[in-house]
Amino acid sequence: MIWSGDKMDFVASVVSGIATLTQTLEDGRTQMVGLLLPSDFVGRPGRDRAAYNITATTDILMCCFRRKPFEELMDRTPHIAQRLLQMTLDELDAAREWMLLLGRKTAREKIASLLSIVARRDASIRHRGNGNSLTFDLPLTREAMADYLGLTLETVSRQISALKRDGVIELTGKRHVIVPDMERLLMEAGDDSDGGLLT
Amino acid sequence: MIWSGDKMDFVASVVSGIATLTQTLEDGRTQMVGLLLPSDFVGRPGRDRAAYNITATTDILMCCFRRKPFEELMDRTPHIAQRLLQMTLDELDAAREWMLLLGRKTAREKIASLLSIVARRDASIRHRGNGNSLTFDLPLTREAMADYLGLTLETVSRQISALKRDGVIELTGKRHVIVPDMERLLMEAGDDSDGGLLT
DNA sequence: TGCCTTGCTTGATATGGGTCAAATCCTGGT
DNA sequence: ACCAGGATTTGACCCATATCAAGCAAGGCA
Image (cartoon, rainbow over all chains, first blue to last red; front, top):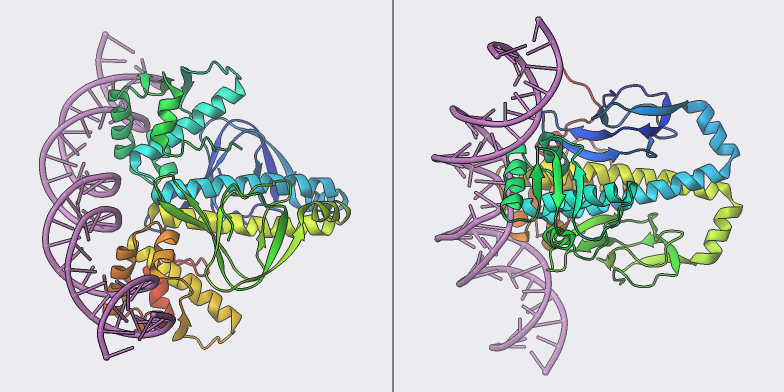
């Protein structure tokens, strides 16, 4: 959709669909640095070039504003800057949680963490708070998961197979996941401090 | 100084000295998620508990405000929220750069990146823009560097030795670094995007 | 002076995850 | 139904980094 360095004279808000923010090294290694979900904000007031690649992983609908008028609106409406500040601080928290994952977790913990996050978000969207036994679809390919977690797609595949073999999750099809025991999955994720914040 | 989960009824700005923000897993693995330098902001309006451990690595002087009055001040002075938003967005960019480092760079690249960052910051503080051949002190122990980079302290030590052996840097004492060729160091860091030109 | 501690280096070995390669599964197009 | 191309799984092997362990240097202190 958008490449890092492109001119970007608008800001936007995601209405529906999913997109990713990625950074790459010149030899092709890539790392996902953000996941854009409905209600997330894209772009930055006061900057005219994109800092990251933005890729839609599904059909996506965004609500765009030209940057200049938006900046003027922000000057006139203090409430907006405050709201944006809250959202940005939440993103910063999420980024820091993610840094812990990238720097210190094992491959298995990384996968379990990702599944926990997706499961929680999915549960909160459809509020089906039925305690144990959750069910959801993965919105990402194995390769996207690898970019998210700082792994290779082969390792992702292997660890998912391992979690399945150990009964932590069940799979129907490639993408549909059943979690018989959410507690167990959270244990596997390593941070049972329950502290996963979702954006 | 402050432990994650502690009550924190103030916000602050660093005046002088250096502190770190770290997260830990319950088995003791720790990951640095932020570096607090002079002028950086600590704490979050609208949250009353610290989310991270804050550790001073030098003597430090901070300018503290009680949280409630500060929040009121922010409501009355839109300019402050905007300034804070800019700072937070900068931190978010830094966090994302860091995620790329943690997820995709090799140990050698991580060390070179860290040295580049410290060198650049140091150079900008003392503006000694003498082209090549920079010189600076590392403000961190090997262990702190390891926590920063998602490595072990032994690997940090080995990679620094390797860079020295290869002539990328020179050491006098354990902490004082001389960079004979900054270009070379930036190459080693992997992201030579110093201006975004490719031949 | 000699002991202790803290920070750092270096070596030997183990292992988690990467790399390369091949087989299988799935989906949409003709 | 058949085929083509992408997505996924699985296997074999290798290497970068972790782990475990020993030793060194410098400073503080009894």
